[in-house]
Length: 460
Image 1 (cartoon, rainbow, N blue to C red):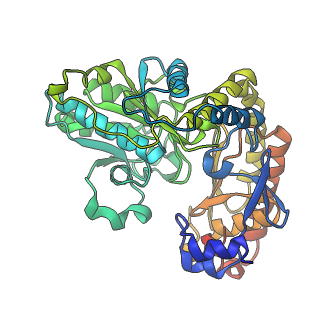
Image 2: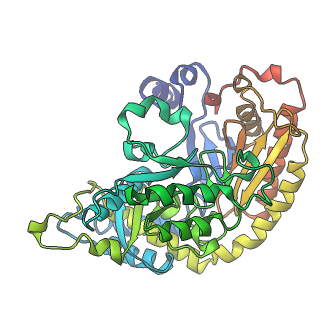
């Protein structure tokens, strides 16, 4: 009988994966999970150090979410939202509005982060067409942005490795600089630079605001760019600028939402209410695909009219507002309330910060970035002069593979080691996982790295 790994290699095409190398190498197959650990077909246990791609919050096999899905299965698994409503979707919409930044009052469901971004972009575009400003058709995005892999989401992205081949398919946004002090190319001193990255936005809007429909941003953390983190005050500043020039502000909270930054949503750290906010990943606690685009009454009202006015938002998905997914999301929010998850993060974040100070002192760690329980550890061949390792050395992948040997599953973004554990991780578990990361960095970077030049990201 064929083993699962053989079937996988014969029939499955994996995301972001060079399949020639995947098929040629042994691969792990996950068979089960419990708490914050995954278990492979050989019975080996691994800490889930990236929350199964940043989605799992409360651990695997969380009884409350399991039961919510089981209970909903006893009623109905799915009905369309075209011409019908359903109970879990209606209740979840209310609860999302209750916890969202003030002013966000309507919820449009979709399936994942990319589709929710598409919804926001199309809403913003159509809004201005129906407001008598047909010239506002363009978008501003951040350099190195990642908003998903559908065509609209790729258009407002900025990661060349992922997106360049699709350029002929895309519309072209105006890009403004990444607000990452460690990588800043605008100023030599981030303390005295007066936030030139934000000033660039004002320059663009002063000249082109009549053409700009919206600004889209990942608030506080550009996750897929390597956990790049904006300086304090940047988010509030660009929100102020967008409002000044009458440009819609779109906050992509797919990676940062649901407690990842220490608050329910990243926008809360600087008192920002966007015009549109995009949610996915942690919305169901890591159980089922679901996404939501939240917006204001002002935008919603611009789509109201007689049927003959043709102001309807003609967009939807077969599984929009899926009752099973919405039931899981409701259970997720109940856990936040009853287990006081956000309050419990405070000491965990502090423990993580203390451990990261030691990791930051390692010879080949150039920068350590933390926002809540979102962590990026950037490796450098020479940290003092910011000389990177070569792409071929795949040092980030080597460190992550070494961590796997020690029982921790993490993934790199280039030479940035990403650590985004489930919120349910205890302080002791966080210390254990970070100790593995520290040891793995030492073991890889303090030896002749040429010994690891054959490592590929697809080993992970």
